Length: 178
Image (cartoon, rainbow, N blue to C red; front, side, top):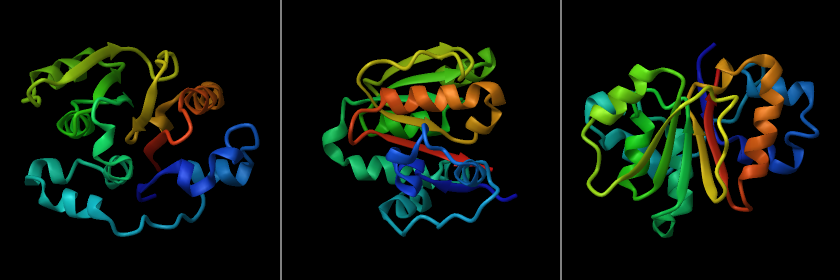
C-alpha cells in the first residue's frame, strides 16, 4: 500500500496508546485502515521549497511536528529511529534541535556524518536496533520515517510503550506507516 504520513499522537490520541491499542488502531498504524491526510501547513510549503534531492526524501509528518513546536524548540532533544543517511536529521539540526540519530547499519551512520551538516550542530550518532535503543530523558520528539514497521513484531508494543513513556506532555512522535 501507499505510505501515509501523519502524527500518531494526533491521529489516535496518546490516551488510547499503547495500553488500549485496539486491533483496529494497530491495523491503522500498520497500513490496514483509512487515515485522514494531514491538513495543509507550512510544512508542505517547506517541503516544496527544498532542493529536488531532499524534497523527495523529507517527510511532511516531520515538518508538521517541527512546525507545531515552533521556534522556541531550538535546543530541544530529538531521537530519529532508523535515521538512514540523515534526510530527516538534517532538517532537525537545521532548526537547532539536538539529535540522537539511531540506525542499525554502520554505513548509514557513516553517510550521515559525511553529509554537509549545519554549523554548530549537536548530533549523537548511535549504532543500535530501534527496538533496543535507550530513549534519553528530556526527549521532546521521536521521529521514525519508515522504520517502525521494520521493528520485530514481538518488540513493537514494548517499543511503543517506551516511546510513550519517554515523551513528556506536549512531546510528539512523527512517522510513517505502510
